[in-house]
Image (spheres, rainbow, N blue to C red):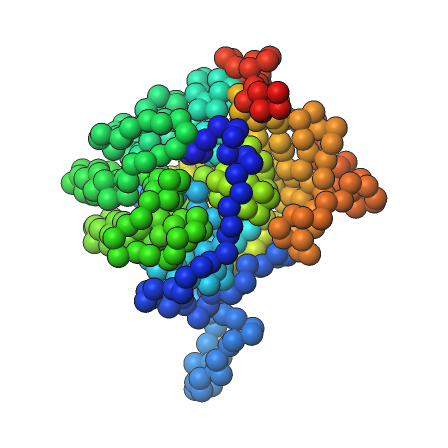
Length: 462
């Protein structure tokens, strides 16, 4: 969720870490820098060309033994748990961030197929989660057009699961989720009791309550004899960045954000322990991702929304699946693939309208395919249109009517500070972008139209 309307765009926040780390678990030896280049092969978690320990001596008969045959796919009776974390940036301990702010998630990542170049569908909750549920970019969805956008008449994957007899459960921690349209297809949809609604920020602390309701829903004995899908969206890393007893990384905004991540990590750890003790744990796939990242002054803005910088849309994505070999995948990936992926895990076909595609084969060892990824932010009441296309290490961002675009090479310019607006590379990427847009079925908002669109920014200019 986004804290403010357009006034948040100009706030500036220092992002430097200001305090020594408190005594928490050290980050694992396999944590390294986040790869910038696309690769099509996975790297086993724990390997590092720079810090590899000497190989232990093993008998020749053992060393020559062939590797075990890969498992073809998920269990036939698999369940799926989706844990999304609001505002979780990609720079986390398992990708080289210097603070051990999320020990339980770091431990989980070591057991996962971890996609280190994954992207959210958009840059704030309403647009991003709408695209995730629909397997399509938000510009193609029937939506209100307001910042707190509502959806109607779209095919969201939980309804397809429900129609196939899969029991669907969800727990949410913001009042926006009460009537956004995301609840369609859920047999049991619960909001944290007593939460408030403020369009400018979020003052509620909700991770413990989310965890408790998750235990209640997942602990239903009926789950032991049925297949289920469960989704919890943890909200506490979203601003306001609250202080929690026993957690103190410092006073600056990034410090307090890190504390919120640590606090959420503790609740997630408790939930993961609960899941591990269930009789269905060995046949359950866990997916962890984020709806967007967060800015701490990198582009003279704070928080999120309104733009599609990498700090806002590059997110964690990890899949912990029975029989899948833990490793890191560095090919470009998108959360738009989660809808067809989750359907595939249940043995169900994707809706023909889905733009994403299942990554189940990739999770189980198939080579990652080189592909383009699109991040889409249609115009709303609070922002103009932004759309980015990523190809290999190149990223082009086009604005409003696509007449003005900027190209960045993320391999050499990861913070997107040196735009290219002409030349052969620029033109090749612009042509690639325009070829993509020819197939986009743009849908006009059904409520906020005309002068309503981007009205907040227009008022700021007066």
